[in-house]
Length: 618
Ligand code: AGP
Image (cartoon, rainbow, N blue to C red):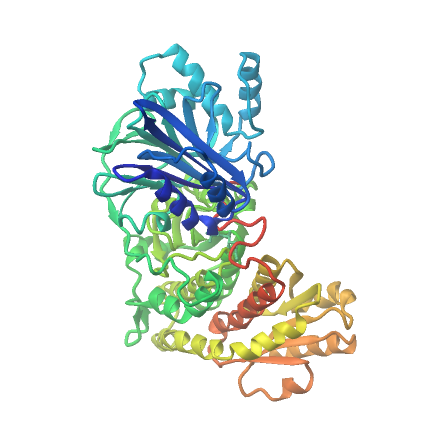
């Protein structure tokens, strides 16, 4: 997803802007640019440099500029192309014909085509194919009609013509001490420093400067000058917003000794799960404590159905949650792709509860599904990692993951944290209903062991690397699982697709005979999740069926199971735990398997091609 950085203050803007967009690289991008307002010999001018490719290419281009770019005000952007190919012209910042207004944008201008046609008819010359550029030319027209209007009001006038989503940062050569930012469905926050402000798409880019953050809400505009900041809503009413303190340290947002964020975050999982569970387990009472749900606990007691809506890995975590809630809380549960729920005609009932799961808290489809449920006055709760994110703020209640920033595009620690919190929720809801003290205790006591058990699996990384090395050249994989581990088959396949670009298909093992088995041969390996659980015998039959077609098999099995070694090519063991918690363990080898193959294939595993960390557009 696109990344926005803005700076105004007493330091040179350019190095801060470049450093800021580097912190946002993990979001995925294909071009980058900066615009800095400098005042040489009393004349204000905006210097703009853009380029396709990595930020290092942009830096090279800047160093080749004849003028050194000074200035204490600027904006920068990493672009994830939505309209127009990744090239210099389409990179942000964009500017108007007179090069008075420069801006960067995250989001989509839905009505840009008709706006662009009418602007061209009025004589405007466009330099890009992007939707964003229309805003600069509308600003130019508004200026002609309102020669004295301050930049913030001019921006609000311009946005009256716009429909769509935007996070915007705007500067103008006419007002060299002002940075205007607007948020409408694309996240933007303001870091408050000492006599300076850093604007960013997410907190990881401001941590080295400040931890005092003001999160803009949708429909708000902030006017930043070196002396002060003001926030208004789009009706020009003043907004007072207390800064929040971001607890993440800058260190957390660094790779440390790991070659990639993805590997770091895979190995952080014992600690991340511990943090998600911290202070929430009451083994004596067989209960869990979820402070974020206390205000709605009575409504949750009345809940007659849970609808889980999410995307990608978060959706697959929800699929595991469905089994947990139905088996242990006795609540009918449905899981929907958020991108489907928002467009189909969901039949909500009075005592339904919508549960949205989102690490970033900004995924457009998940946010839209939430809005749909709120429209129908359905109680909404969330499982979210990013404090102050849209979903965290707009749900009626929720549970924070407390796992620190997840930088790698492929979700790992967020996924196992989701599963851990879904297990907490099944105890929370179950103990409001039929779940006994004994069962509550059993789950809580087993949850306490999970971080250690995950650590045990990670110690086996060398064997998993060997298996990855052996299978790295295959071009197709079938991932199979049953019951709690069926969603893990899909998640394992998603990891391999995302990180190594190999075609991998997740499937319910029981469905294999209804088609996919036709693909199996010696060149088509299967990864089968086969813990010693209630459906183990069934999965062994599936393994035999694959074997009969000479398909190579990599099995994830429970420690101590010697039998399976006789019938498959590779076995990766995981410790024994409750059936409902095995997904937290069985996914670990699949994450490492995908990571190692991606590295062995020479890909950028932290920023896989075409992917973005937070999909804030539809
Ligand atoms: C998973 O590895 C992907 N990065 C992606 O599917 C992700 O899970 C999905 O976009 C949801 O993101 P969210 O949790 O931030 O809403």
